[in-house]
Amino acid sequence: MTVLSVGCGLKPPQNDLVRLDISSAVNPDVVWDLEKTPYPFNDSSFSEIECLDVIEHLGCIPNALEEFHRILKPEGVLKITTPHFSCANSYIDPTHKWHLSYFSFDYFSNSHNLSYYSKARYRIKYRHLQFQGSRFNRSIVSRLANKFPKNYEQRWAWMFPAWYLYFELEAIK
Image 1 (cartoon, rainbow, N blue to C red):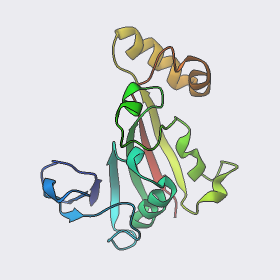
Image 2 (image 1 turned 135 degrees about the vertical axis):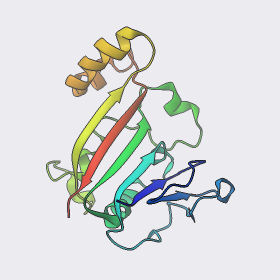
Image 3 (image 1 turned 60 degrees about the vertical axis):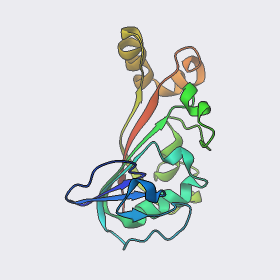
């Protein structure tokens, strides 16, 4: 299993891990700007891509998801974390270009009525709204928000802000 760590930062080298970052200062295996396509990898190169706290910095998320899809093996998994739109951290960082939702990646699934904007197809294996703070937030609010995400985002998000989102998307090829 070969894993690509996108925006690896100071992650130490590991077997079967390719570390990619825009900054040469962190000494990654590959220095690359994700705004440039195609990415410097062959089709179906990776079993997994971890994109942790990176996607919100990109100018064009559909382009990135199409490239990730291209370089993932069939049934490969893309793991994404990003601040939830209700989190103050989503707005504090001036390099964040997007404020994402529980439903943001539905556009890349066959079941979404606007999926024609991209040819990349993913199956949403898992997604989760993560909360911080009190036990009430981490247990009761988290349970309700993840059970009823549409209601949460439409009615409760600004009263009980989520911390971040976690996704596992499986490449359909």
